Length: 498
Image 1 (cartoon, one colour):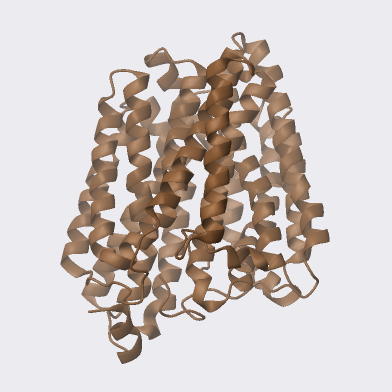
Image 2 (tube, one colour; image 1 turned 45 degrees about the horizontal axis):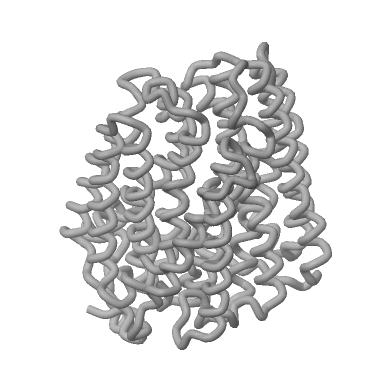
């Protein structure tokens, strides 16, 4: 069965049928596994550092190693599914992710854990695009939007409970179970996939895969991340740092050249000819750089400097996630009525204000007075801009490129988080901080930088977006991704998109 056949003949799974429900469980289980892992690890990092005697730069690689592989390969993962079969690549990615999770849970030292996290990112890059593509390719057209909406809502719940699950595992059986819990979830996803998901592929997919472009992206991101992280302990003039930085610049320049001249590039340059698409992606760099950094900083500060338990630190920002989970649909509907410019201007300013309030957290912090106000304001900022940002990217892309546009925005968001996590702790001195007082001072400087990054997206959107810019309606009813923008094409506009 091909995607074309499903779309044109009206065939496919019915959502309310037993097979349809099993297929939905398969995609939700796999995507929720990756979503939970992204939020759980933030809470587990301080305990990992203690048990494995790891420095903060090494702990940064536990986060950035995963993001590096995911951001570099997520577009290639989608292209592989289009060409070789979405179910096949999805299952391979899920098995890969579970095996890497086992290695994470058994890691005897920080070096093995970092390698395992990179391998997890590779698995995530294979399964993340496939989870949604399977829904849009396998369900009949009349049920496709409802299936995507259910996937979105259940995935949002997984993101919301992630900090609680992470804290409970760290305080209970131990941080290793934050990774080992992925194995039974993956088993459920694989069993359901084999039972109910038909194989689909895009008969019009490009014959050649841009492996060279993907390789250049990996080299550029990997080399730049290593140089930025190691610049703190080694110094900016260190020979290894300078030479690795030069390799990164060369790889990035070669990637841009290839994007402009290759016949089937990994990222079509025509996407960036649209001003709205370019402006929103620049705003994504600022906003998701701030988001990826902030959740790490708050969890680290509360456990290392304030002395809170992993459960307490994991639940500290839960009000922000709950607000995003419950109000994002209303925010998206508002953007469809009034246009996205106002919300993409006000939302980043609110998020920046919330981060400034969270910067007050100190050694004797109280959740009610020092955390809750900032979490609420920060959450209102997220509610205001997350849904319109995703919808505006979709609205700016032509139907032929809507899936690629979503993937580009998702990759940019994760690369921005990766870069912020590599650079800001070094600049703020957090990497070298040892005493609680030093950690607090560095945390506050780092969070002020994050607040400035988030707030800067507001003026950018106001000046860069036209008043008539559109935020297209999509089937997504919940926007709860704080580690990356939702990887979603709109099945109403693009029923054969992957």
